[in-house]
Length: 230
Image (cartoon, rainbow, N blue to C red; front, side, top):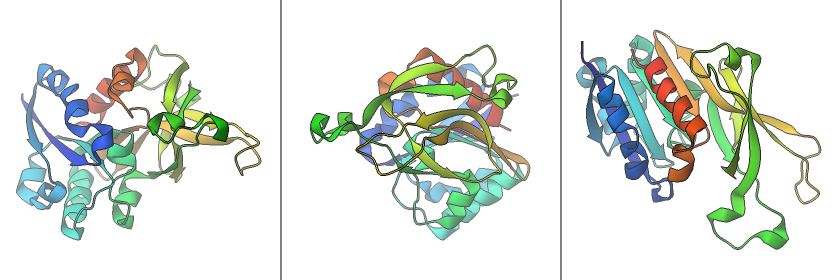
């Protein structure tokens, strides 16, 4: 039985939404999905199309979505459509919509930078080595099966979140003398969420194409896509 996947991509070009999603579209097709692509989240307002969609892969950083689009997405997920994505394409989308933020359960706040003496004014200012640590829940979850803690050098997301998410992996922001916080901050790095009859999957690693091709990150995202799909 063929399932349907809708790839919605756009927003800030710095996350390479076209090239990033192109890395995973062949995987979806190999796993039996009929894939269509849209560059405008207004497609979420099409109730008939959303009802026929088994998985939404979203890569839309920042940008805006209409109230009708957000309602359509919420209704579709509650009815069983899966929603999945990575990094800013799902955790930093549609900042002005509280309804969207509630749906996803976590929102990018910042990515701490290097020491002020080491910054150059480009994206690499925020590329820090950090560890993605599996939670006890994550170690027993099919998305993370067989994986262990791993390190990356990329943007380390600080995420504002609620208790309805099921955190499969975390990352800890250390205390630095040049940052204003006073104790280590643990943020979710990979999480799932159940919303009505639907499932949501988020990986915060995924800033650049090389990160998306890291063996651990690629495995987590591929499994997350399959887990979230109806």
